[in-house]
Image 1: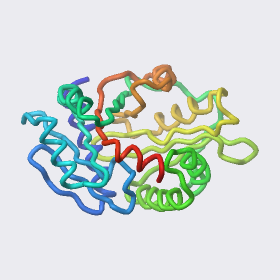
Image 2: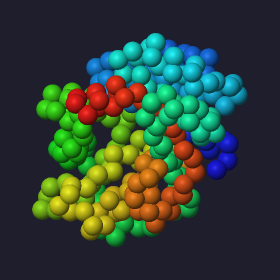
Image 3: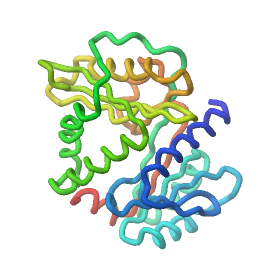
Length: 256
């Protein structure tokens, strides 16, 4: 991937995260992004490292995160070489290290093999709620708070929703977020009873074809099987975003 493409993706991610934050704080090598109403959401309660031109150590990043988010310290490093460089130090200090693969669409996606439609966002929220209830922190109160936040986030970012139906009910979904920099596909989910039927492949393919003709990408877990699904649609592994969280944050996410 060209450096200019990566710059566009970083600009896209920052634009989305900053738009839904309660406040941000500029740092020498990035931004602290705050939203205390949803403390378990990594995108808006994190020290985000954006720089490629300034060296920064794991100790500096850990100190910045603990100082700004003492209950739930978290760090997100958007540039792979820097993230890979500090990861061993975070791991040795007991932080949880996660790697998220950025996959970019190279060439036109195939036509969906199943019926998919764009729908108002309200139509996919029951499916999103079902997914949230499976999260380790998915208590009733946390899910309600999260859904309220996601509705506001979708409105602020102009998200578009796509779904496949069974008997009129949405059973598979994804969202498409567009900025002036890039298009991102996210929140890909199929209800368990309908998995293995190609529905996720269809909704992602449809969303990708609806993207605005600029760079289109998505994230998936670095060790997850979903990479194979996205590869069949023309997405290719390009970059790794590193995230570091303390065990205190891990417990908070498990308990809500």
